[in-house]
Length: 424
Image 1: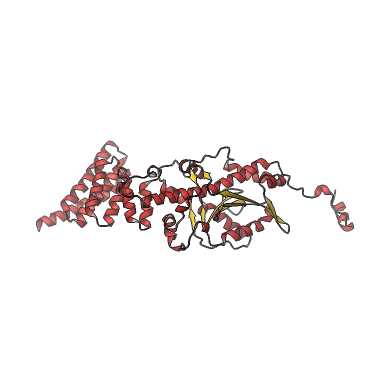
Image 2 (image 1 turned 120 degrees about the vertical axis):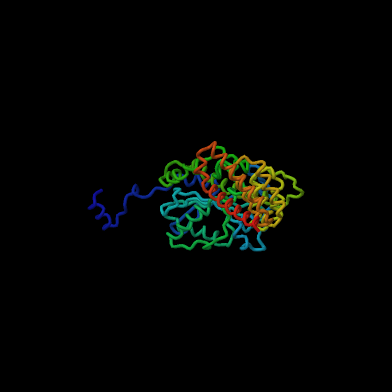
């Protein structure tokens, strides 16, 4: 059909032949039926909503999702750290909003669209998961308005890398669509950061898949690879046969938000166990977290005595000994601090740990006990250890130059102090 024919048809009111109309997506009915979803329409916009009701006694990996005892404000403040003072005294598990998104790319730039979001709420009777699926890109505004209804309720947001990616992508899409988005600075608990602290040095990496396997005992069998998810959505938009793959994307997203809940329960349970340690007895969670890192979190939340009890249980760990010595030093328990730092010098094979312990001992002897000779003795020990290591490993000469300079500076000052005391 040439331009003249089109012009003539337009003038005469003849409609374009049916083959030029947009065809319906042949995957839509399959997805709605398979997931028992519903189609939400608003004018020409539409999207799919899928709801799941999960019994609270369900198990995700090794975690029972009904551990209501851990959802209290005192435990959550340890994870939230700097935001802990914002929590309401009436906080409950129902105030948490778990969310995870699937996008058309991983760059997070203006060209990245959110096409699926999973939202999880805890109710009195069960666990509710709602998934919104962007049926077509022209319906994005309706999609974002529905998300806004959830994010603007003042809930505590819970995500995994949501601060760095998920939340920012949604906010960017809202800005591009001239829509407000929730609060400017919401209370947001990113479990990636707490996982890195609690299990520091224990996992090969901190991807959600690794943390699920090692912390939750949850393996995703036949899960769709993350890199394929954008491709599946584009196939869907183009009307290709993508129904089974898209169903797998929905399941992937559902498992993501369930893992967020299970992971938070696990972390709160570990905090709870750390606060309840008594009589220096190692509890059943002892092998599942980094005691030094967890104690740091407790100390930052002013649980100093509980942190000390936790560290006593892991006194065989060098990092735990370091934290224990520093905590005793802070509390002005000088004899205990000296004992723990000296234990490090006797046990450790690491050069930096040895230098750290000798330096802390020298500081206590110099500034608290006023024993310059002992301070000088431990500074000399640090210098000798560094010299010995440099003799066998020549690369140490440059690698530990900063430590060498500080040791020599301290040594020179202590020698001058001792000399002046003797002359007096």
